[in-house]
Length: 303
Image (cartoon, rainbow, N blue to C red; front, side, top):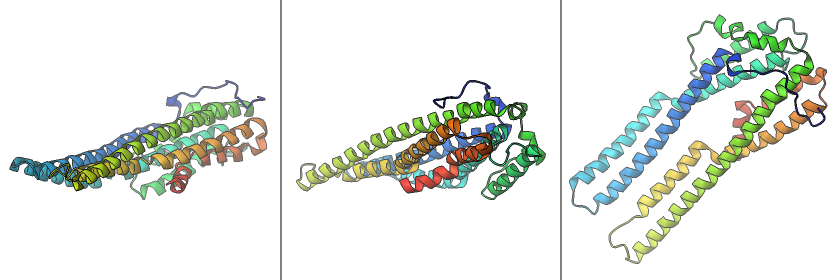
């Protein structure tokens, strides 16, 4: 353990986590995809409508003008439909539930946070914490048809109880390998992907803006005749900027890079200096770092 690398001890499969985590994770991914698809469709249709409107100014064809009108109307329809579906709100609610359940499960298993060694009723504590958090999330629109009993101790799987019964050294190595290291890899990869996406879209919008500038200069010189491509290119550039804002590439790069650094510091401390007496607090700090609330807080500073 001199280098802080956990020794293989216990393996947790995906099915060993609470059922509510898997269902909420699936719903979150589905709603996230729906949310991004709606925004992308709206931006693309709006750009097509702008192209059709520009073409209609130079083509003596009522069909092209009608097409532009239809596309503008379709843009409005897509926006209204997306607003009624509230895919983004549902995505965030389901993601919050999934991460809450997952975090509580890990803390329960390894005696972290409020589930410290010696706790008289860890199952009761799990039920209480989960019930309180789900009650808060119901206020923002989260819904589930399970009974109250099914959302409490019924979420504690046999594998979770088996891990909780293991000695401290085994639980420590297990947590460092299957939770902390896994999160380190995820945040590192996510930051790298967001950084590449930010650079790619920044290049695209810069090129489109430059082309709009050239088009404006050429039109002023009379080189383009009656054609005004500035509006189309400007709309395309604006669409690129809007897409970056929706995906939050730069803020996520900032937030995930900081979390990766802080989590690595916590990992080294947990592997080398944290004793069983301070273990519960160390786990609680690690879980705080990977919580959606902490990520959202950092994203605001990276915006």
